[in-house]
Length: 228
Length: 228
Image (tube, rainbow over the protein chains, first blue to last red):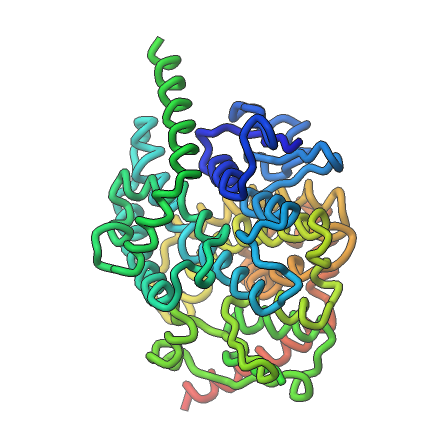
């Protein structure tokens, strides 16, 4: 059994859950989620497993191992189950193309969506004053990066080639927030037609619909609890 | 033959060169560097290979393939030559630990050293006014991350376990700039003893000394050309 210690309201936990579902694993049969709260990630016990004090981590009860970093957790499970969402690493050429796509997401997408999410969603959500200048600068930077994505996606259906891989899925949890707060108009407005075609397809995956439902329900519960 | 299209004054080209040397490849025998200039990375020909318009890329004349993203290029070569700097991906557990360490570098080190490098080195170098507030904020964020590194490195000699891997090498090119401009005092001042032990060891690698000599000479030539 795989146990994912995290919370479905966390984007990194969503990234792993989405990947596990897309691999074909079934929630509460092949893996379960052990819901934890933010303060749990700062305890000495947690830091002993994840030195950076963030969620989630994955426990594989078959071998007693624990894994950190959402993207790596997803890759571990895909390699374990020989899912085509990760090309076989015994073929260095194909694996390198996949690995480059993962690196592109982490270098050209993640840092910008993180800042935009903080300034455009998380701070306003908590009534903390945000920095509009940072928000606009980061949106402009991300827009330039989407131009690169458009070139990339003009040559292949997905970011690592013509097969869907984890590298595509990695974009979804923060990409969804970008659409909600208009943080990355280029994902959907047609300025970058190849990006729009790709985004429309991956954000409509059944696996994501399942995760979105779980996350929306969890947020509704959190909000209801806070309103009491 | 492997041809690295880039410039040794670029940190990403340094990262690949360092990795290739540490794998055991010999410059001008097993691989060569085709030196290119920054404007070359914005041409349609370059963008056709690297849609984000950055250097370097690697050409493998044995199979005619081209590879982008410095970390992925290094992994490709290590897998091709079966170097122990990348654990065998046929063992998902060990590979996942390595992959998590790579992800930690890209999420918890790279974004901060990039900002600190821009504000504390690149802008002053070009006499562009920098943002001291951003510089100080990013230094403080990186300092917090080094606390996580210290926990990690208190449990293993290197970031992915007790063997040196590419994940360690990835930190060196920007880490060196941090030492030069005091951007990350925690690397060397002993606040984080495990970090200092690790940094002292990896920054003293012979492969890095070779790259540093190349980069220092290239900078000296650039400066001399500009002074004319």
